[in-house]
Image (cartoon, helix red, strand yellow):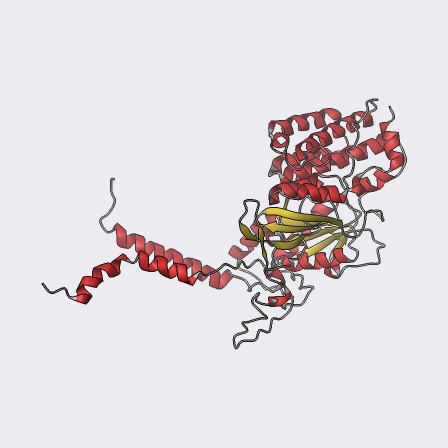
Length: 382
Length: 87
């Protein structure tokens, strides 16, 4: 719609109401941005959704090398029209994934909410919707043998649309049930950047899993100031505040995954507040405990002896300790949980159902989130 | 119940048909374009499926036929009419 026609007043009111509604945003986490988008939960003008099918704006954060670019194209095309994409990036990056070729770029985290609201308003006012990145064709055309496209090879029905049929395997109850093989991709809400889980599912139960970090361990240039500050030596107070912010972002992420949106918004507000104190984190920890979420997740995803509920409680304790240090106190932080070997993580996923598996993968710390060795030694010194 | 009109049944039928008609009209006018092939893929956060989600099962024609005949009681009442017992 390049030419704007004068509209009757009634329609303009509807469009104004639509523009004032919270913007449904789906976040695709790329490398170098950590869990920074968790802070957007605090903004009332935004609604972070769990599926691209509910979203109007696709927010891409960080870098998307190689396979991440292909996955991003897949997600971008899954958003229903009208849609647009926004990219939080550093200005100098040369590699542009195809999905973000026409996307507006934002350089600062603080400017993201206003940019998302503006993009949504432009769409509601009749602006152009982002076109598909991939071709509108089935993944591989299926030419069967019969007159109506039916038939394949042998008794198994062939390979329709380029994918084999699911073969049955034995269930945990001794019955036969089809096993579906899929990749739970890098942009699953709650996952750290670049984490891909290769799952074999029977119904909703994970039979076998493989965990992979697409794009390698996140060691390249970062767009998120907190991720950068965790890696550089500097003032202990600044680093402590960055660690607290990172831990509170993780708390916001896990609360949103647990269905506690308002609690996630509260954690995000504390994370983004530059003047937050340890008592704010303590009150937040009390609220999370009252919600029974750590208790509900106590037995879920025990990897390395620590369950998801314990990881959540540990993140809150570390945030409180880090904020106390940032205020000039001389406390020690509880040590960060050790990163988990991918094979051990994959072994822990077998036998879990879908929800528990996603919570496990979201709560286990990512290697990119671990403080670098020099920073870790400095933060543990009294 | 108080004040339920006698003609409630046709009223409810007309109301149901009106609702159905309104929903169809809304779909016709505001339904939007049909989903593209990428939009028909399952949402896996950017991942892809390696197998289909279509499940196959054995139709088991012979046991289903036996069960059908075993429980086909209406034909038992047709049997005397068909055979014409003459005393």
